[in-house]
Amino acid sequence: MPGIKRVAVIGAGPAGAIAVDALAQEQAFDVIRVFERREKVGGCWVQDPAHRSPQLPDFKTLASRTADKPHDIPSSLPTYVPRSTQYRHDETSVYPLLETNIDYHTMEFSQEPIPVKQTSRSIQRHGPSTPFRHHTVVQEYIEGLLDRKGYKDFVECGVTVERVEKVNGSWKLTLRKAGSERDYWWAEEFDAVVVASGHYTVPHVPYIDGLEEFASAYPGSVEHSKGYRGAEKYRQKNVVVIGASVSGMDIARDLIGVAQHPVNAVVRGKWHPYFGKSAFDHTDIKTRSAIKRIESTGGRRTIFFEDGSHIDNVDNIIFGTGYSWTLPFLPDFPVINNRLPGLYLHIFQRQDPTLAFVGAIAAGFTFKAFEWQAVLAARYFAGRVELPSIAEQEKWETDRIAVKGDGVPFTALYPNFEEYFETVRQLAGEPAPGQPGRRLPKFGKGWRELFDGGHQRRIEAWKKENEARSGAGNSIAVKARL
Image (tube, rainbow, N blue to C red; front, side, top):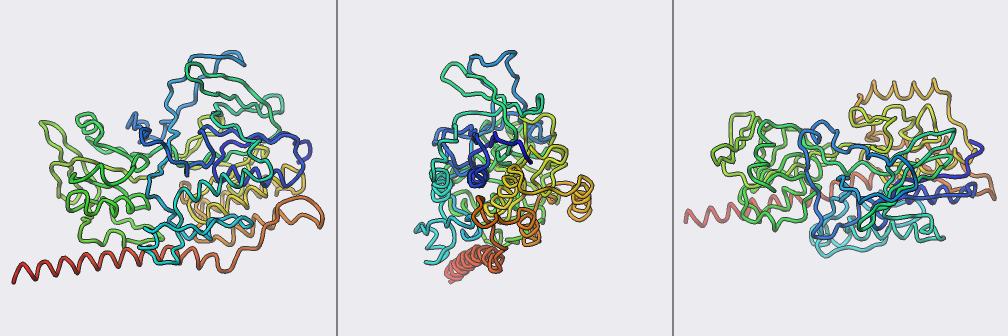
């Protein structure tokens, strides 16, 4: 793609950080600018101050996935205007004890190893060879990548990208930097844009009859896993956790021995493809069917389930029901069914591939996948590779919809990781000897074993804890009978 000299990167999390490295190593661009709305780099691995917690402002928009609205743009730029009060969902879901839930080897970029730093808690649960890393290690790892070679000079923190639009052949980015009393708005133009803003910021809370009334009657009683900051808040509370994915299982386990017995977990019989139901096979967790309605009139705090059962005196409801992918700064490219249509290989906007995405995929080898995507995008922007015809790109999407469906599963690389990695690597090619550019290795034969092995380590730890608790319970019961 000749003529690209100015590239903007939106977001300085893991996807944005590796995108900067890939772009810089091509040595083909005059300007690389990174805009990060948080105060530091790291994306969803940045821990918020204790006093800052996410809001659930409007249950209707959260349920319909329309909560993150585009910001109104001042009529003339640059300008100062009163500080914006529009809520942007920019907090992270990090809590103090959070660790990675997959083997760190399968997370690290191919040329930058993640440091071997283990917590005593992780060693206690998974042994001295624990493959899981504390969130601070991951955030420092991302920041360290940008520190190399002066990359951090490319990054401007505290800047929100409010609009991205094509104007007279260039991408115009409308930018806002918040001040204590006034915001500064301005615009910059680029030849290409990499969107690396992530999609774990706007909580999804499904519609449940009576939920909004319950939340209004008992302020603070309804939360999303994004706002979970540890178990102590729920001591001796009657808690219902909704969702059988990673956050739901982690929170339900964390509440054992702190919240009232049992911890109620709404799982609907849909188990996680990696972890199954082991996390919920604990005597202190009671699985529940889907919620039919919630009643809060007359002082009641009752949840009714579809199987006819109910729970009274509910104190807290925690939703571990995922996120909505929103792109409020790209109003011309609507997200549909929680995915962005028209992306070839989850990277290139088909009609205008100077708009590329790094990280528009579901879980699985995420950091490594970001690296492969970033290298291909950088190589294309540098004019060193060509993309297939529009017809072939359309066929790729049509064929994938036929297999995966037109929703979140479309973006999931699981289970055909190697096929995707090799497709991207072969299209990116390798730099010629002596030429600039980041090199991609072949998909490692042991990566999948490490990936699956990390999941098995967590499952085994849960099983041991389950058996220990069950054995203790049986012992107590025998002593009582004696």
